[in-house]
Length: 173
Image (cartoon, rainbow, N blue to C red; front, side, top):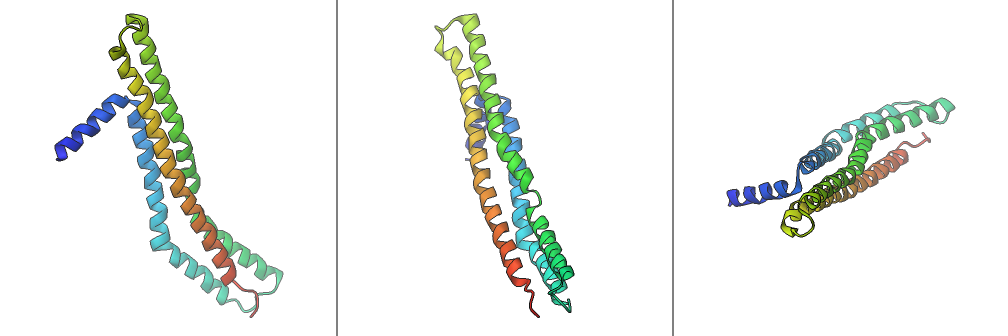
């Protein structure tokens, strides 16, 4: 069973061309950063949030301009920690379709080379180039779509956490 799955993956990458390996690398990097954010949210964020809340709670006065600035700074620190690597994830999501387009172009160049050397009478000869044109496009779009879904979930979580922190840092004493 493992050999059959390996053979299918090998054939898929063979049909997709070299650009498919670059897309695979980008998708792996994308999901590495997504999992890093999930791990941060699940394991580290609570201690950062607790530390910010404790610093606010230990303040004697909370109504002066200086207290407002401290509160603003605490919220900003937590938000920066929450937002870490989200721009990288967004960049990788945007790069995926571009590499898919690169695969389309290289596949079409191969089709045109076959047409120039053999004419358009050989559809089998052109099939390899066509698959090298379509498979990377599909892979780039699939990678981007999964990344868009993940980054939207991450951004929603960040907004919710920021709003909750702002609600917890009250001004009255």
